[in-house]
Image 1 (tube, rainbow, N blue to C red):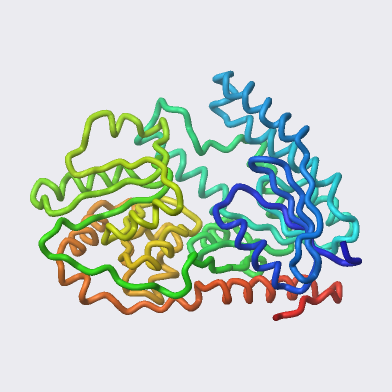
Image 2: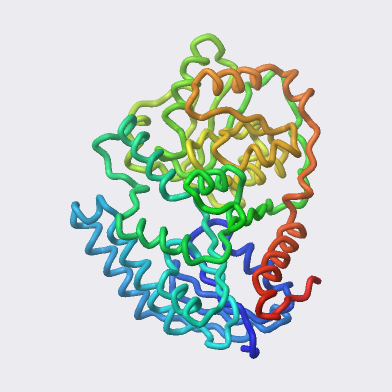
Length: 400
């Protein structure tokens, strides 16, 4: 590693590799710590070339053991204690192995407190990437949703109280907190985090631009698509309620669901629903083919920091109907092919979906410019943010 470098801690978020790709072009050496599925350190030179990679199978096995034990003890599983413990183990490993020449830490929320404390003790800047909304808002929505739709089920999204306290401390110590949408930022402001501490960074789809628009065929059923984990916080119960009502008077649509069905919603699919086709999890290549066979993506999440699937759908030619509790409002400012609704008001959801049952909808809403959600723009935002945080250390990054 060079005299000055960046330490990057990554979590299990879908967009984590995008940050690595951005740093590869930033003109500064950096190291990346991965915790899933294997503890790995990758180190890159200032040209973005991988110069070293090492694995720690011991810590990987320890985490696997923790999960095996805790998930078999109901009282521990129900609080997701295994997630809290595995995060502590990962953080301990990073804090012992990061390069002491590092001048900045880009940390991942929930897995970084011990390492953050070491950087702050050395008066070094810390950027905290938070791939979710503020934990207080998360907890509030989670409580209401599970109480309403799965009161006696294992809570897939439960956050252990000790981990919640850790997240509060991470928020406090970070110099900047990276968020993925204005919706996410609003939850931090609501919880009294200074707006000047927040930095919004737009993600991007795997295709540049918006792609083509699917050819509309009036003689076929409208093909709605949901992609993601099939769970409470994705808003699936309310979506099915609305679609069942619409299906009573309009049979001209079907819904395809792609994703992992969580235990908490298994009851919803115990019996076959006439208009629903469930495909389960698919490879990225298979998913591309599924996109081509559909017209509209529906994302009814009651909370989601962004929703990368929105950009993926747009770049594959689909229209999008999405909850306001995602990054959809940000994208809709640039793209008329995105329509939004309040996920808690069923009449709003019904109105927007009903509009999409009219063939004219697809002819009237085609304008879409997603230049702000490109790889180039993402890289630029990362470099600007890093320079801003590093300026007090006189450790600027070249903007290539």
